[in-house]
Amino acid sequence: EIVLMQSPGTLSLSPGERATLSCRASQSVSRSKFAWYQQRPGQAPRLLIYGTSNRAPGIPDRFSGSGSGTDFTLTITRLESEDFAVYYCQQFGSYSQTFGQGTQVEVK
Amino acid sequence: QVQLQQWGAGLLKPSETLSLTCAVHGGSLINHFWTWIRQSPGKGLEWVGESDHRGGINYNSSLVGRVTISVDTSTNQFSLTLTSVTAADTAVYYCVRRRGYDDGWGSYYKYIDVWGKGTTVTVSS
Figure 1: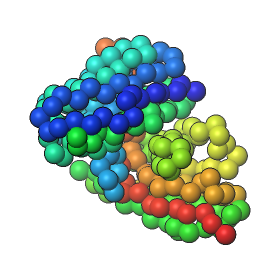
Figure 2: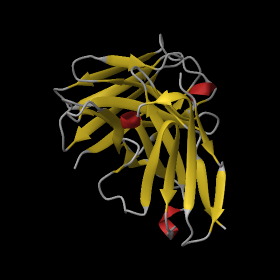
Figure 3: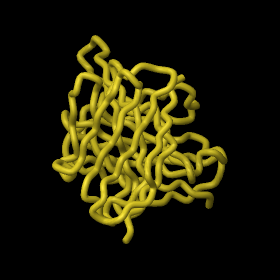
Figure 4: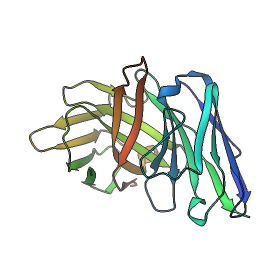
């Protein structure tokens, strides 16, 4: 099973600042099978990025994804109030899928 | 726009069977993968398993033997059954739609694009 490690666990930033979230896999992951999700309190996660760098419909362009192999990054260029939430990475193998443990982006 | 409506018992005793159902509104079960994800404070987000409408099924290896996912195209619903539950099965359970497609350029994409609201299941004596 591929293990995904997200860092940092918590990111304390102010609105307008840039957020850089990291996800490292225990073995190489296919770019087309890597995604990022946002979860706000009391809500289900929602898709932000699929295929490493493709924004889901309706996702603002301040969100971007990059990476390959074992290292992937989610960048939020200018944090807005609704962006303070928990972010999860996910990879899909042939017969299973795993999530990272999450990065909480909180107001500094 | 596809929406998922889920329901099922929220309080179980150890050794009982968890049963959840998810109705798909605004779309067909065909050509997608129907998945259950659970979330607990201790284990985070955990994939339970998935099925397509033809019976192509994959389960989390840690749950094999206890878990069954079935898809019913006649009712546009899919369901989760988990037997012999313990406190470790306490979680919020989400039904979701997992997309899978070939872009024609050699890449096969997989991602979850629709989530149900979640059902809290507590296992306690």
